[in-house]
Image (tube, rainbow, N blue to C red):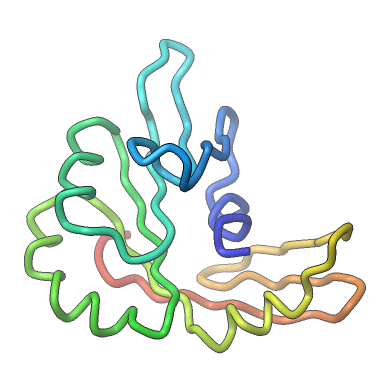
Length: 138
């Protein structure tokens, strides 16, 4: 669900999901230019410093969306190293991601409305709001 949310937040032409975990050299989501260049690299989770270093060499823009219960510890340990890179880092609250996951069904219609630094999700099973905070960048 966090991948879907990150996709919605960054919606643009040529944005696509990658193969995910089965392709370790690819981000979770990317956008390529018409010329084939990597315009946007999006990671979901708590990636290693080396992975972000590689991403900033390959893509014009890099965004990371952190969300799990270890997110604060991950950021505290690695933020000094991440500050060296041109990348944007965002953090979702774990409790809000859990609420979003409760809306999940095998087949479903999901409506996402983005306003400022939050997303409002509505589905047949209910609705919730997921806010994010900027850790680094825009």
